[in-house]
Length: 227
Image (cartoon, rainbow, N blue to C red; front, side, top):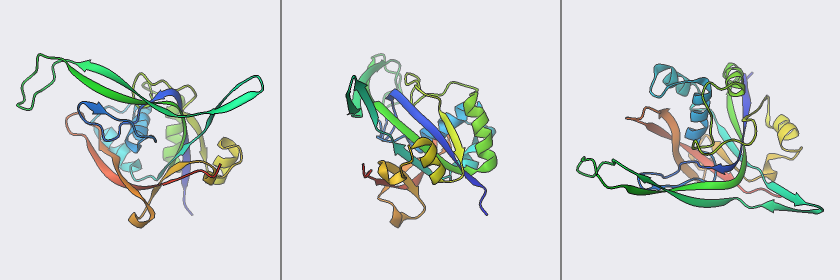
């Protein structure tokens, strides 16, 4: 009998940014939270410094946990009128000084970088992890050691991130999804075999050390909601 649990996180905020295919000048955001960002958030909650043995041990214990990201619709109402808010991408820019040139020299000129954000997005993340790891993360997420953000420090959660520990998807449905099944919502699901998926993402964190970040790959499938 499996002792795995579903750890649920609520990633809700006016602005979010989930680095995807992002290098150098252009920092794009995916439409779903990346596994690297979600586990990085957990590392921050636990107070694990980058590149430490403690961090590596934690990543080794959870990096193969299957992750499902569920996109929740956001509604607004005024009087007797209500409507669904569309998720949008916006782009901001920053200027960065003291960057390195291709020759390895420090440039005296500022460089402009472009960064994407999601607006009005709301997600439930499910991590299938061992019961003891779920219990520890529950404690850490309820009282995080360091600040936790939705991809960037400017992106502050608008709701508590910890959303519960559950035995199965039916319990998640009853508690967090208004009794609706997973198929009612557009979601991205990590799968075990190549044939089950329709895309491969390089977002499994192996090491967050600044000078040698390493990521592995995982296979995912995106399913459109029926409602």
